[in-house]
Amino acid sequence: MHKYIPNTAEEIREMIDAIGVSSVDDLFSSIPEEIRFKGRLNLPDKMTEQELDKYMRELARMNSSTDDLVCFLGAGAYDHYIPSVVNALTSRSEFYTAYTPYQAELSQGVLQAIFEFQTMVSEITGMDAANASMYDGSSSTAEACSIALVNAHKRNKILISEGLHPETRKVIRTYMSGRDAVLEEIPLKDGETDYETLAAKCDENTAAVCIQSPNFFGIVEDMDRVGEIARENNAAFIVNTDLISLGILKPPSESGADFVVGEAQGLGNPLSFGGPHLGFFATTNKYLRKMPGRIVGETTDVDGKRGYVLTLQAREQHIRREKATSNICSNHALNALAATIYMSVLGKQGLQDLALRCANNARFASEKLVETGKFRLMYDKPFFKEFLLEADEDPAKINERLLKNGILGGYEASRCYPELGKGWLVAVTERRTRKEIMDLAEKAGGTL
Image (cartoon, rainbow, N blue to C red; front, top):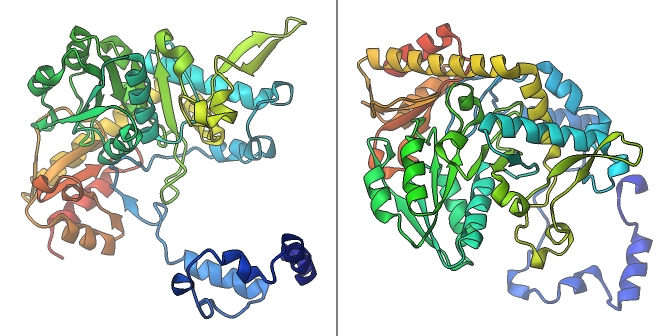
C-alpha cells in the first residue's frame, strides 16, 4: 500500500525529528486543547477497490441530474444542449491537462483557442476587445465595477440595478468592501430598472451604472435609456448579459456600453451541480490595458509566421498579487475552449436560431401556464428565456409535486426577493419540447 500513502511511518519520523518535535500532534499545539477533535472520525471500515467502486456508484445514484429530470430551473445557470463534439475535443489531453500558457512557444494551441474565444465574444457583444479566464459572471461584473471605480478618480458611487442577479450583487459588495466605494441599489418598477430613480441618483459622483439585460427575471431592459443616463453624467456603463440572447437582441455596444460582462456557462458548459462556470469580459479600447484575466494577441515571429502570445498586461497581476489591480489569475481556459467549440459549431445563424428557439419556447410555456388559471404573469414586459409568474399556491409545493413527476420546477423568487411572495421564475431553453412544456402546465396547474 506504500504507493497510495504519501508518507511512510519512517518518513514521518525523519521529518518530525528534523523539525524538532516529538509527534505529529505537536504540530497542532497552537490549537487550544478544548476545541481540538478527540476520538476517531466517523468513517466506514476499509474497503477493497471493488467494494469502494460499488459504494461510490450507489452514492452517485442518489443524485438526479438534468439527464434524469426535465429542467425548467434557471436563475443564472441553464440547461442547454451540448453537442457531442464539445466533450470530444475538450477531453483531448493537450487541452484537458494544459495550464497557464506563459511559455508561448509550447502553448500555441491553447493560446489560439483563447484568441478565438476572445474574438467571438468581441463580435457577439460588439466591443473592441475581450479577455479570458474569468471565474464566472458575478466576478467579471465585479471586476468591471472595480476598473470603473479606479478610472473615475475622485468619483466613488456605483449604481447597480436590483434586476442584477442577487448573487452578483453580493459579489460586487464583497469586492467593494475594502474600497472607498458607495454602492446604491436602484429598485425595480414593473420588473425592470426604475429609470426615473436611476436618473435622479446618477450624478457627478457616479463612477458606474450597472444593469443586467435580460435581467434576473428574464426581462429585456431599455439599455438605450440607461446608456443615455450614464453618458449624461460621464459614468461608465456596465452591462451584464446572456450571450445567447444577443443572437436576437442588439449588442450592448450600440447602447454605449463601456463593459459587457456575464456568465457563459450556457455555451457548451454543463451545469455540473454548480460549476465550474465561465465569466466573459469585453470592453472598449479605452480600458484595454486594465482588463483582468488573460489577453492573447496575434503576432508574427522572426520568420513572418503567425503566432499567439499573452499581451498587454503587467506581470504583477500573475506573480506579485499585492500590487495587482486584479487578482483574477486562475485558468478557466478549458471552459472557454468548450464555449469556443460550441460557438464554432453554432455559427452566426445557429446562434440566432438558438436564441429564437429559447424565446419562442418561453413564450409558449408562459401562455400554457397562464391558461391553467393558476398563474399570472407578474410583469407584462418583453422577456427572453425566463419569466416570472405569480402562483395561486406556494411555489415550493408546486416544485415538490413536479419533482415527484420527474420535473425540476422553477425558482422560488421569494428566496431572494421576499416581497414577491408566490413568485415563480421559470426558465425554458431549446432543450424543452412542446410535449414537455404541456406536461409542465398540466402538473404545475393540477393538484395531484
